[in-house]
Amino acid sequence: MLSVYQSLLDETKHLFDEKKIKQLCSLFASCNRVFLYGIGSSGLVATEMQIRLMRLGLNVYSITDGHMMEMNSVIVNQECVVVGLSISGKTEEVLRSLKAAKMAGATTVLITSLRSKRFGNFCDEVIEVATTDNLAGGKIISPQFPLLLMSDFIYAYYLSVDTGHKELLHSYTLDILEKTRNQKNDFVKEEGQEE
Image (cartoon, rainbow, N blue to C red; front, side, top):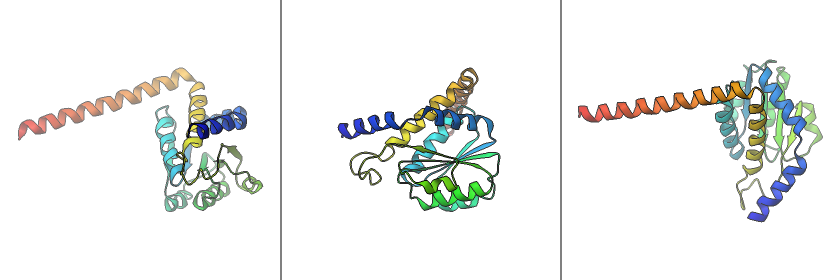
């Protein structure tokens, strides 16, 4: 397992394109909304990315259901960035939804391990991630690993743009969560006392 992780890290270092990541983060900073599309393991990464980027003040939504992706096509426009996540590059729901988003005028990005010229027909950018044999099946390690690495890069670069403001937003988000947790605990204590 460790050798598989190491080979994925080595390939990630080889594939890493700082220019593409910076460009994506610039798009995030200048757009109205970001949608992250992913199914299965890729959907879990999309949700994780949403939570982390939302804490930095980004107007971002993860959509992990194929029907919801199709319905979301109605509200996607030229002020949106749509990022599809698919390790295999073959997840039809994600690919169809990226095509629909491109037709609606959105900027589209695919994060995948598959190299295919056809992605250029409906993606403004393709960000390649590392892969290994049978990664999508999750037999040896979690198939999310290469996408999580890319998610960390995106988060770090997005944070580096106007860092002070984003760190304030992050702290504010954590404060709100803490206050909500304390209010919930107080409510539970009060309910227990009434009984």
